[in-house]
Every structure is written in structure tokens, then in C-alpha cells.
Amino acid sequence: MSTLNAGYDVHVIQQDQSSPYHSIMSFEELNLHEDILKGLYSKKFDRPSKIQEHALPLLLKNPPQHLIGQAQSGTGKTAAFCLAILSRLNFDDPDCQAIILSPTRELTQQTVDVMKELARYTKATIAPVVYQSDRCYSRVDGQIVIGTPGTVGRLIKIRQLNVAKVRMLILDEADSMLDMQNLGQMSVQIKRLIPNAAQLVLFSATYPARFKRYIEQFLGNAPRNEIRLLKVEELSIRTIRQFYIDCEDEEDRFSLLSDLYKVMTISKSIIFVHAREVADKITARLIGAGHYVSLLHGGLSPDERDKCMDDFRSTRTKVLVATNVLARGIDIYDVNMVVNYDLPTTLSSPERKKVADHEVYLHRIGRTGRFGRRGVAINFVHSLEAYEILRTIQNHYMCDILKISTDWTNLEGKTENEKKETRLDNIEAFIKKTLKGV
Image 1 (tube, rainbow, N blue to C red):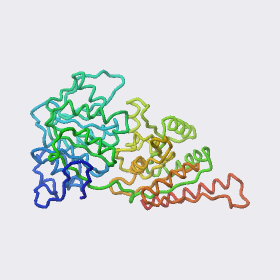
Image 2: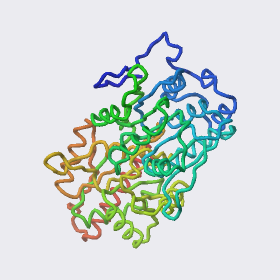
Image 3: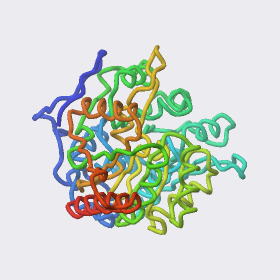
Image 4: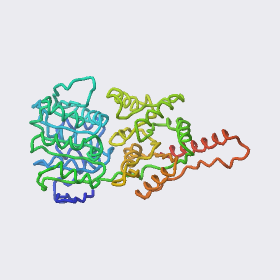
């Protein structure tokens, strides 16, 4: 375990060997209730993951202390804060005692599923709270409320969610909330509405400077000796093999994507694009070419988004076209390949120039290589600008993004169609060989 370097006066936890809360090697050491242990074992958690070893003792320490943790999804952090909530819950009090805020409805549902599994043998009541366009805001009853900041905040303000007894507030994927529809400020407002004594927990996959400033705002006047910062591991790209393919132009880029459908369905694959309009367009063209794909972006209705995720998780579809709404936090076990149809970009300040978005790239390709498995990321490069963006990403992470050879110009005596078929065969063979090693 390493520690985060706080830019302001926050007590940073070190490995205090004399502390009884240094780390744990088994769940039994935490003196968890037997009903919680039964839920753990039913979910096949035999021993704590790395983050659980270090985070759980801090989360359960009395008196409660605030925790800011950096760890990627797929490491067991969700189970860590779910266990902490269950351990602090008064099962005889029906009122809301804990709130978990997630940036998207998909991540909310994923957290609900984990909490239900772990709470299976307890009397805990769990209330999912996400926006439903065809339903009114009705009263929410549950000891544990899990939802998106906008909907949870609205329910509190219209007095349909009583937060007078909230003991814990969890922000999951907190760094991503800074980029999404003012979710960060909504979370700050919710924090101001709950009791001052509530334990605050933030989990983030990255720790940029602006997130440090947000933490300062979120924690407010909390005494610094009541705050712990924990960094268990960085997001890693070491388990993901990265490649790029040169495309001649926009049309060649789509043709290649369509031709690679067979390879993408060997396991599950996610195709990332930068905008809803692009997602709609290439999904329609892929379906028109006879391919079966799902589509996910923020412009779809809640029911459409839920169906899309259900279809993809259950393998009714094996190829998903998505915007960055799926880039963070979602754990889907058997995604072997990510395709960056569009490389992730952002606008620099103050020039407003399009530049590489390193964080989003990391989160996108991190949808594969989950839970210690290996994965493949393929980047499509169709312009000089795209090549420069890819080169910037490669330099930033000091990693190798290897070119998949697409040279078919030297095939003398063959027609243009035959050359293109040979090119595609070579690319398919290379990707299949790479996937076999994953």
C-alpha cells in the first residue's frame, strides 16, 4: 500500500505497524455479524482483496473517520463500502441510514446488485433511486439508498427521502462526477443536508489536481485528524495489449469496423465513440449490414439503457456501441476487447484546442483486462490529427501501442477487392492470435 500526497493539510495514513487496524488477512478478523459473513461466502469471497485488506479496518474504525480512497473498479472496492454500511446499520431502525451516490444509472444498478447479494441474509432494506421519466417522485423507504445525485437530491428537497438519521455517505467514482452534468456540486449539496456527524467516503479511480480541490470543498470543515487517504493501486494498463490500425479515411474506418464484427463476437467487445450522433449512426449502419449490436448513451430513455445493459451482461448481444457513459466503473467480467473508434479528446484551456484525454482513454480500455485478466484495446487512426492524439497518449503513459500491419498495396496481380480481403484476413488473424493469449 502506498499513500496519496495531499496538497493541503490532510493527515495521510501510513502503514502503522502498531495499529490494530493496519490490515486484515481474513473477514473473520473484522468481527462481522454472521449473517453478513454468510452473504460474503455466498458471493464466493473467501478472503479480502488488496483494497479490502486495508480499507475495511479504516471504514469500521470507531469513532468513524472519513476515507478518501483511490482504486480502480474491479478491485473489490464496492464490496468494501457495502460491508462497512451493513456493519454500521441498525437493522431495527427502518429509516435511511446510508446513501451511496453513483454517477450513472448503470453503476447504480451494479452497486444495488452487489449490496443485495451481501445483505441477502440480513434484514437490511435497500432502495434503488434513479430517474424514471414515466414515474413521479414518490416516497423512498429503505435503510440503504443507492442512486444518482440528481434524483437523490430532488427526493430530499421535496421531502420524499428523510436523511435525518444518515450515518454514512459514499461517493463512488467521485472523480467522474466532476465531468458529468454538475453531479459533483449536487453531491456537495446532499452532503450539506445530512447530519454533520455522518461518515464520508469517496472512492476515485484517478486523483487529478482538480479532484483534490473538490475534496477540500466536499469535506468542508471536517477536522483533518478525522480524515484518512488511502491509495491501494493505480489504474494499470500492464494487463492490456494495445494496438492501432491505420484507416485510409472515414469510410474505410467504418468498413473495417463492420468487417471485424466476427472477431469482436469471439467474446464481448465495446466500441467507444465520442458523441451520441456517431453512436447512433454507426449502430444503424452495423445493424443495416446484418450485425447484432447494442447501443448505450445518455440520450436513451431509462428503460432503453436498462435493457441494453441486461442484453450485454446476459450475452444476448456481444458487441456494444457506447459513449463515455460506460467508460467508468462498470464491471463486465468477460469483455476481452475494446475498440476506440474515436480516440478520446477534450478541449484545452484557454486555447480550446482538441487534445488527448488521457484519463478517459485509461478508463475506456480499462473495461477490458478486468479482475486480473488480460485484454486487448484497438485504436482506429483515420487522420493525422488522430495519429497525433494517439502518440500523445502513448507518450503520456510511456507504453507501447503497436501498429497492426495493414499494408496491402504490394499484392501484385490482385484486384482491389482481393487486396482488401487479404488485408482484412491478416488483421483478423492477428487479432484472433492475440485474443487466444488473453
